[in-house]
Amino acid sequence: MKQMDRRKFLLGTGGSMMALPWLEMHAEEPSTRKLKEPSLRFASFYSPMGFVRDHFFPGEDSDDFLSMPTLRPLQSVADKVTLITGLYRVNVRGIDVHNQCSSCYLSSANPYGELKSPYPMDRTLDHLIADKVSHRTPIRSLELNCNTFKDLRESIYLDNISWYGPEHVATSMKDPRKVYRRLFRTGKSEKDITDLILEDAANFERTLGRHDKDKMDEYFTSVREVEKQIEKLTKHYAMYERADMKEPDEVPMTRGEYIRMMGKLLVLAFQGDLTHVATFMLAPERWGTPQRFHELNFTKSHHGLTHSQGRDDVKRALVQVDRFYVELFAEVLEQLDAIQEGEGTLLDHSMITLGSGLGDGKDHTMDELPIIVAGSANGKIKTGRVLNCSEKTPLANLWLSQAQLMGTGMQKFADSTGPLKGLLA
Image 1 (spheres, rainbow, N blue to C red):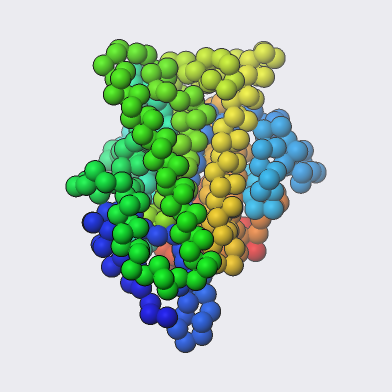
Image 2: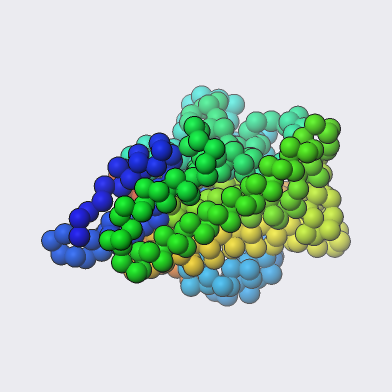
């Protein structure tokens, strides 16, 4: 079978940024007819202000972390996730704890060294990885943020985990319509992108095997579904955008629907090989304005809840918020795991982390950070377990290991003491 140049196909679609899902015809080694290993994807999800510990971490002698109330939504992918305990970050005293929690979460700055900004921040892990792997994809990296607030009275540090360097933020995308256009629009044609793809695809589709044809149909169907939702959203804004409506009610989606849409766009970006690097903020770090959680039937300040969790009713509400974000994270993992790619699934060929820059939102501690890693990184990470690290193991050790798995060749990261022991299979 004649091999198709992936880049030529990309350029053939009217100059669009649309790529194809991983197909067997692209993966065969001509000499052996064996499948190449699919490229590894990296994503870091951020949930603000920690998690309620006694609903997140199991007892010291228990490995049954998926029985914990907050983590039960992950049971459908139980054998593909790992809970890591014992990780911590240095809390640099004298500067705002929440600002450094989010802005320095993925930072490469040594907190003991000379700082180039008010916080121990530098070029973040996602961009250090993208520096090495972005040649593989049309989009260098994707920065997604599910903060719908427009009352931007809070610090920029609270709303970003991705930075090109000290004080140089990688502006995140918050509007799913803009994310979609970046992924799938040509910019010159009003014709929807799937029609453009199908026109060029018609010339070679006859040579595809049944399996590849099914994957093409699956991918185009997924894109169509998002297009329909985007069209509905666009019509709403055309009608209501002139009205001065307060967030979050001005968007025609509930909080859960909004995050699900952004998650689906991330899945499509990975499935279509549009990018292999992404960050995803489920919500901003400390934010004064209360947020409406439609699915939970209340409007609360997440930050305010963390400081009053001594009250039973407040703690119950906070646990609901924690579980809500884990449920949405689990849905992304389930979508990735439902997509077959080579001898595994897209989740198997990914490394998706959910974590927070705070271990405890009430006491502002940065030890015992809540960290979940999903996906085996092409079989290299041992999953379906609890990895108990020594007390005060630097979070940077995990980031160093992930950077190495992504092929950066990095030997040192921030205040790391080496790759994370026990992570690999």
